[in-house]
Length: 297
Image (cartoon, one colour):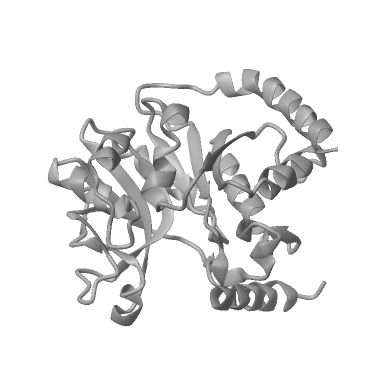
């Protein structure tokens, strides 16, 4: 059954290739998205003993329907104009590909979203997962969407609009951020000394990022949406594993900043719903449920 589904999905992907090639391109165009989805999800056991964490059900704040987080993230990338999408999964998490293939066949997610898959053989951190996208990305700048959250307004579309205003040879990255308290900042990656960009309404330029600081240099926390220069791969190769023996994306971003590659950020519009931990997921279900079902059906 899965083979037949995969074959049909491949036919849809080939058919959509012509449409993808019509997209206007230039040196700095962003056309591809990478979705790391290789986490083991041990905090969600026993669910993750059978299913991938990214298949956990949530309520879509736009449609009020029960969806999976990964569906909403794929649609977010597609809605922002990124039709070529690489999902980085873990060995043994074929359920993600099977689920998304079925959703495309049933037209629950766009059929012209070209979905690609690669396995991260060991959980060695976000930086290592992104390194697996090097052949897929080649020399293009690209978007990264983490699969732990979903939004009332598309954050990648927000990033793309800001990115169009700051194209430069020394571009390194632009990230979405949100304001947090000093206590909350200890649980996030935090932007270092961000300052507004001249003649820009919402774009800020930072000196770098710091992971889970005891004394935060700002109250702007990274929320898991990025546009990265393809130069990031060279910096990831230079980066040494951190204290948890994992390759951290934040360390590579700081190496870029030291080489005068510019690290920008924008503050999120709309509501971010976190589904990365059982407590956060339950809160997201409550928040969306209270919002969408308080209206008269």
